[in-house]
Length: 357
Figure 1 (cartoon, rainbow, N blue to C red):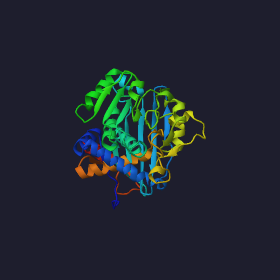
Figure 2: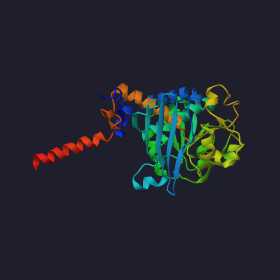
Figure 3: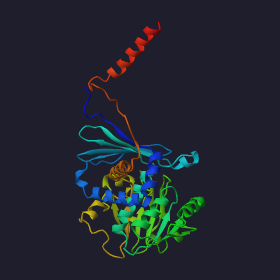
Figure 4: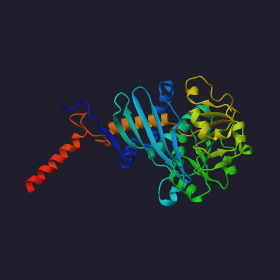
């Protein structure tokens, strides 16, 4: 007799995800994922958490990011290869899975490259909404690659940013970003230097790709009241902030055990104080305590954000009728007889051989 709960898996491929975001609206996806992340961060203690597993090479890194609550397990496969664009490939490529905890059955297989860009921007804006000064209207955006448009629109919609100052070592990247943002309600200025972009900005977002110990932002650039959104430092050996900037800042992280290895705080002593952001949401830490305080979000990306994003995209796909159900795992009449799937085929081949003999 067939099993009563044969697993089928909703598959959302890259073309499906593009259709989903277009139909739902990018702003709605950013806001919806930010809300889902906030709700899940408020359930912080319910999750089985661990730092991601990473395989590093000279060219980049490939990572697995697992997490689970009592009902669902998720993981993300993601890479980071800064030189990929020279080969016609994206720097970051990702996919993810949601599975039932009680059975292990995979229920969702989804692209996460586009979704990662959306969830990263949603997380950045969610944090800035709590840590940046409420009157923040101008943001410097250092690093104008694939993530930059999403950051710009998330900060426009969720934080109230109206002016952007852009800088990238590749002028064509800034030109691309400025062109993509034309007519979207943001005053955009391309700058000739990091210092020019950062000067008098309320928020500074760094989204650079090079896998190096860099000091893109230095202490003399920092002004009282700034909020720093450090997104690019996300693996061992990769930083964006001079250590003097961290010493001047109140630093917030996602998951401290991971951030100590991968974030800008990797360059600081083990006792350097950081606060996990969920504590701000839960009211256990006040967040920004004064208008002149410098706050910094040392963002490396954490599996709980992907768990939230996968749940949002699954619900949106089901609402819009996007995606298809696939048999990712074998389905058998007798789950104890996996070999029977092959034996049935072998017997049919043998019968056909006898018929044609």
